[in-house]
Length: 68
Image (cartoon, rainbow, N blue to C red; front, side):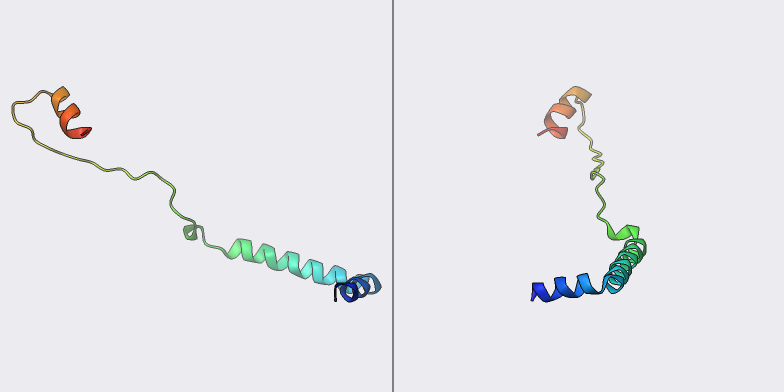
């Protein structure tokens, strides 16, 4: 099977070149047509936590609430 493909490619150099060019152009079109939003969002997630801890210093709040 592979020998037939190789023989056909060697005998028909123009056909091989045209098929290669067609595949190359199709791949360029495919790359350009892929939308950018199809790529995943890699930005880190951010969370805002707002709390009230009456009569406590900011250091205590940070140590006991923010980083449990």
